[in-house]
Length: 68
Image 1 (tube, rainbow, N blue to C red):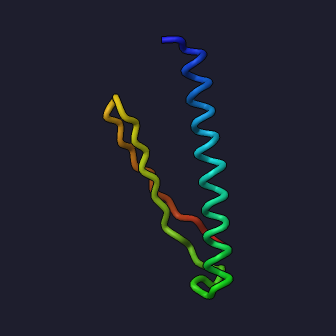
Image 2 (cartoon, helix red, strand yellow):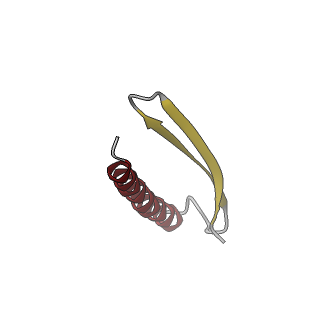
């Protein structure tokens, strides 16, 4: 295994996950506030499930996202 290539590929993947996830969450929250489903002062439970094929990895991360 080429450690440098692996590290770069992993960083690229995680950057894409982070940027895309943030964009999607921000837009969904704005939409929910605009149509009245949220007031804007809630704390939202969030969960990510990471799976990687070929190594049978499944990892869950749970946290809260505070809007105020």
